[in-house]
Image (cartoon, rainbow, N blue to C red; front, top):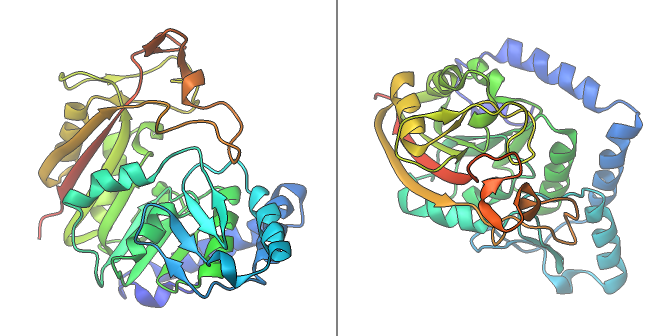
Length: 320
């Protein structure tokens, strides 16, 4: 656990160490579902980037001129093994990874309200392949710890960061439910694209509050329905074809959840409708995407008949 020494002494280290060991035994099984992602990661471990730039829309890990065409094709082949790529874009030794989400757009919406990340201890809950972690790295944090239970995303980030060698970034096979192991540990917590998958969103936000250090900031981003009333949609089965969706709030509803969870200075700072300009099918994610989740000819309505998704952003602070 390369990150444990960077956390405060009051972290529940014994329980966390035991959980980490258990998850590592699980993920290191020699079974097809694990090997399909572990093996390309092991192959990419032979590469080291001389140049890394996380300051722009595209996370650049290695310049094209650092390796020859034959090795670049090897990199491309191994990166393709992590399909579908959900977050990006990345450029790895000149291999341009055009992910499903144009994630730089979300980051641009966060920048105007982003707290100072320099020297801070940060958690990115549901970090996926780590795109936002790499963007945070440009702000010189002490530690960004990604919580990610997916084997695919875990190994994808491990592969990218083995090449990038950014020691301030770490990942573990954790979910939002493991935040109680980190009482008052984080200066900033990002909870993006997670809350609508939780059956008890206010309890989840209370866990976020507990894991924040006094005076810390939470940035919560969620799929949402349009409207000003403080209400949430509870879909019968799927929402925009996504299973495991519980409460899809309006922006004001999410703000109220934050207040009731105990946050101060809660601010709804951004709300926008989704579109296939931001989430779409690409060569690196060639399955269904946003245009398949809404009705043909009626982009304001999901295929299930619900209001089409918006995205909302809320910021709150823990009392200092």
